[in-house]
Length: 164
Image (cartoon, rainbow, N blue to C red; front, side, top):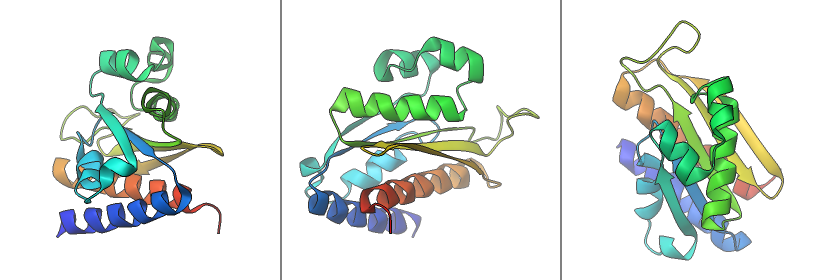
């Protein structure tokens, strides 16, 4: 059922991309490819999904997405600043008009008092700039990953549809 809801969002993203003649890209960390999996489950995705990166390590974020190492050092991999840099990097790397990025702590380990398990930042970069949101999930690892993927797809769709 969870996969079906992600696919339904991906189908809406497809319609929005086709209507606006835009391509999208993705940069994921804590979701491990769930966003890209949902997007590519839709038949014909190659017409509007340019590609994506699962940049799980800090090195992958810097080397594959162009996230400045100084940004990671200053703010940590799980931060609004890194999420924004990942989204912008995905736009650039895939020559896409819009990109979504996710970075967070899925759990069960890895959390701290300042950055607890479930903390997630999602950014969407597009022609109008870059939006980032902070989320705090309370599920187990799989639930946190799925909640993050769903929120990323919802933010992507919101950006593609534009202001209402």
